[in-house]
Image (cartoon, rainbow, N blue to C red; front, top):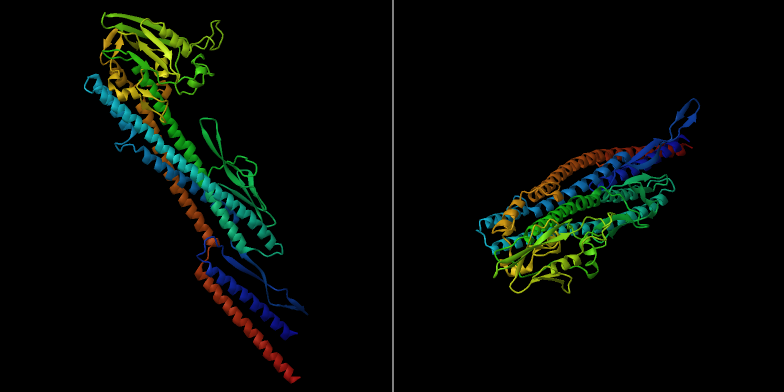
Amino acid sequence: MGLFTAMQIGRTALVSSQVGIQVAGNNMANAATPGFTRQKLFLSPSRGQVMGSYSLGRGVGIDAVQRQIDDALQARLRAGISDEAASSTLSDIMNQLESVLGELSGNDLSSEFGTFFDTWSEATNLISSQSVVVQQADQLAQFVRNLRSDMTSIRDQIENQIDVRVQRADTLLSEVATLNGQIASAEAGGATANELRDRRGSALDELASLMDISVVEQESGSVDVLVGSIPVVMGTESRGVQVTRESDGETLTTLVTMGSDGTPLDVTSGSIGGLLEARDSNIDATVDRLDTLTSQLIFEINKLHSTGTNLSGLTGVTGELAIASDDQDVALNSALNTTLSGLPFAPSNGGFFVDIRNPASGASERVRIDVDLDGLKNDGTAGTDDDTTAQDIVDALDAVDGLNASFNAAGKIVLTADTGFEFSFSDDSSGVLATLGINTLFTGKNATDIAVRQSLLDDPSGMMIGRFEDGELIENGTALWVSALRDEALDALGGVSMAEHWSDSVQSVASRASIAKTNADAGSIVRESLEAQRAAISGVSVDEESINLLNFQRQFQGAAKVISTADQLLQTLIAII
């Protein structure tokens, strides 16, 4: 029995050393394989045989071949991967946004604003001609439209990237669910499906680079994947992810939702989270600030230009705002007035003057047009039923001697003076003329469509440089007011001037870009540190595996010697018998 036991001991040693050589060789073969986790052979002595007062060993047994991995460290690494991807994505987009703004380059919005107001300043001295002012206004309008278009292009690129990456995330979730089933099936007998687990780990790492996830392993060997507190993979079922876009008529909102039932997912990290933050908190915010600034530029300049005049007054003018026929008899401040409720600016309670002159006779008349927009009915209760409508404005203007007012087929207000008469406006405390686009410089409502009135482009002599003040014509009056507007604090912009508002916007972008760069660098350092820690545990050291290979080689040789010796002794024993 002793010789046969010795052979059995040698056999177990041969088997274990063969497995050890295979494990070491496999580790060395995959030393450079991404996602591979070092495997380790676990051996334990076989149960001994008791003989009298002592126990004899019966060889070695193979307990397991296990992946060397720290699950807690792996969870931290995936969080680090998500954070780095988010901050790196955000930093890249902020760099693009800074490049589009191009501040301090000389070809930027601040410079265009400066040149625009400088031209008006020169017009106060009657240095710049009306055509120069019109050209500069047109150049500013084009620059603003192009700037917004460039930022919109970045947003469109972000939307496309969100679509691509969410689709990839959905594919990875399906892959994880499939691998869950394969792993559970392979490990049903007690073995560990190391290669399948490595594949699943790589899929989860890539998924973490797209969105922030948490992973919970079940007893079966499968894992559940959660985004926030919502499971997106449960065992072999992937609930999927998709992009859902919702619009309220003006704003398009992009959401990442669950593919199975449309539940919104709170994706805050990974490259998808970085894209969402870049779009909402940076691109959209900057576009909104540009639109707000442009809207106020249009409104404030138009308020001044609409009440401006030249030595020769107007003989005819057509408003730029097309008012739907259903809205012409609806109060200008009513929420039911769809034409005006969609504007970023609005008229207020007040009024304006119309000045009618006959140059030949020298006769003139000033007529006050009241604009009732106090939001009160005649009985003092709240409501807009008795407030001024566009039709009221037309009727009041048409009632002025020497002036005719009506709506054209497009719903625009048309004003014409009788033969031999000319007219102008002054002291508009309501802003209704600018809102209706009567005798304005700019058209449009924000950075999307700002433009110079086409009739001024065709004939710059219609540019209003002067204005009537206290009944006296000041030839450069409007130019003086526009020049002063450069530094005027506006309530609609939070109590700062237009130049300061845009400067704050640019500084905010620069600050966020700097923070994003710092976070990206820090995220890279953290991720690299965690990967180094993981490599110390799960990475393959070729030197270490070479030593293991030599050890198992020696073990194999020793086991073969044991068997050979036992066989020789057995043959000797048989020969004696």
